[in-house]
Image (cartoon, rainbow, N blue to C red; front, side):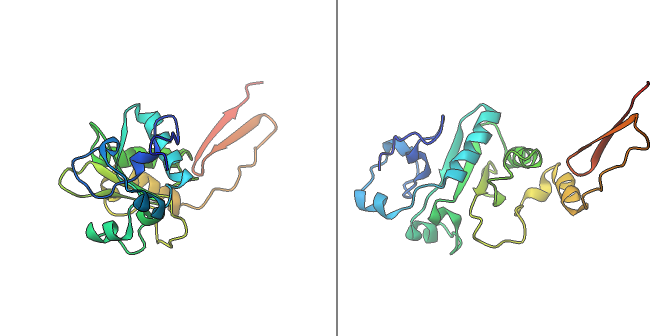
Length: 196
């Protein structure tokens, strides 16, 4: 595999691989061929979702942990069904963003349906820096919710949970031919009465 292969406008293949050597960048790592061929490629949905985040923040999105071998996943305490091992998860950070800031952005991009087609699971990583967010696109793993630990601390989380628990409103029937109703999303309704 060519680690310099461009996956998107801002992400290269090598950014998604981390053999566990701390303190190095992906460009400075040496990649034994047997290690590379044994690991899956990152999922297209994953790097597409990260490119969307990158386009919005207009800053580098750092993949701190992407594709992992089973041994590396176990050494960092990863779940036995971790999306990292299938190429469907990444732990990301953006300089100048806390994990709550980044989580807030993920919620907003989800609410406007930009990340909704890709996102399967996410949580805020509590570690020492509190700057990383887990993004998972592994839809085959059953979960109770997309929103994992830490999201309750994000200001928009209450709105998100309210929207997801509110039944979709029925389309409004105009009172007369001069009234036009436009429904946006599931709970916001604008009504315009023509003055004619």
